[in-house]
Amino acid sequence: MTVRDLQDEILKIKRDTDTCILAHSYMTEEICEIADFVGDSYALSVKAKSTPEKNVIMCGVRFMAETVKMLSPQKRVYLANASAGCPMAEQFSKEEIEAVKKMYPAYAVVAYINTTAELKTVADVCVTSSSAVKICKAIPQKNILFIPDINLGSYVKAQVPEKNFKLLSGGCPTHAKIEEEDVKAAKSAHPNALFLVHPECRPEVVKYADYVGSTSGITDYAKLSAAKEFIIGTENSIVQHLQFTCPDKKFYPLSKDLVCHNMKIITLNDVYACLKGEGGEEIVMNEELRLAAVKSIDKMIEYGG
Image 1: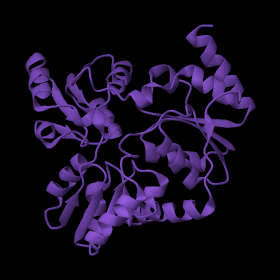
Image 2 (image 1 turned 120 degrees about the horizontal axis):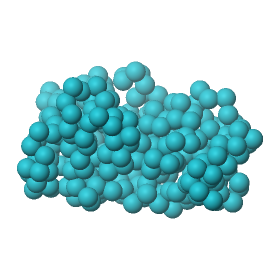
Image 3 (image 1 turned 45 degrees about the vertical axis):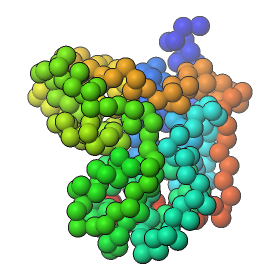
């Protein structure tokens, strides 16, 4: 069976089983082509809420599927590959953050959306990489405990100097492994290229950026820019997607090491097996946990729109 044959079979079964397929932007091109929606994690969760299908397959990592279930509890939500986790989302437990909260009782807990449902239960508000600055400015509390990503937290802290931040030593291992020397090497190799970077990268990397933003923000900037060459400082799938979308422009990876192995574990065959009931994992969440976790997302909507 060819890739095209498998894609056609997936599209047929998807229709027959009343299933919506969500693909995070870090998925491969062949998965994005059969998805109903492609984008960042929270945007996909919102899309799933408004679709008529009763079943949803998330081609992404576990916390993303959890967020879909939190916002659409009436739907059956599946993670395409049960092994697809997120090291950043899972690096702190609820108990660890509760202990830190006791140390800083006057601090509001602001949680990056890249956290488990359990961890969201101890957060005052969630943020995405694109809304973090706006929400941190908008919340009434002056003191902020930002979890879990120290790099995104450092970026937000620099943009919101009027507030006091406490940061933890967490973050995305894929983005955090990139160093200043990688930027210098890429800019030397491509001196005419604009540098677009995700704020999950280290501050010493971000400082060189022509644009800092979420995955969707980077994609939109590259599409709309009059420039013709770009160094992409986020997961390397975005380089491939942009090459398809903007064939008249050139896109270069910041580093060959900018690869999320948890995302890459998901294959087109995983989606096929999940649709047939022979793979994947259904996300089951008790209502008490869901209601406690979704409060932080409700606050995100209240402050961030």
